[in-house]
Length: 153
Ligand code: IDP
Ligand code: MG
Image (tube, rainbow, N blue to C red):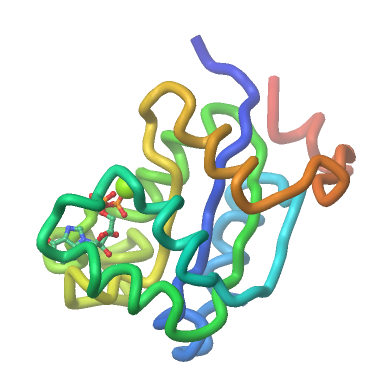
């Protein structure tokens, strides 16, 4: 069943440095996903470790946390019908080299460790956990897009 939900999305330090924030947000806006929170910020070591806790035993964990704390990121919360899965589809595969053209990673990346964007995975509770980790309740805004009646039946 389709349902309105929220997902956590972040333009990673490589995407910020490469000037891709606007392009990436545009894709989500044009698709009809609604921005309900956004924060330009730098992630510290503790937040990086918590955000990527599921990967703490992986060999790439230190490189990953070094990278994600290496410069500012654009963190955001997007809302829409099946937002979690739709964002994952728009992102492409984890490895940009295996991502189809037309996806964000397939259009803007070549290397697994520099894949431009993060989006919550579809596992139950992932998006909620990440949203809470990065945003306080009062940093999220409930609002209606003027085109909502034309986006949804
Ligand atoms: P996802 O970002 O597509 O959800 P995850 O498996 O959750 O992928 O991995 C988190 C991040 O860790 C990836 O986006 C990528 O930057 C990095 N990563 C994943 N697997 C590898 C690897 O095998 N080598 C190096 N970095 C990796
Ligand atoms: Mg993941």
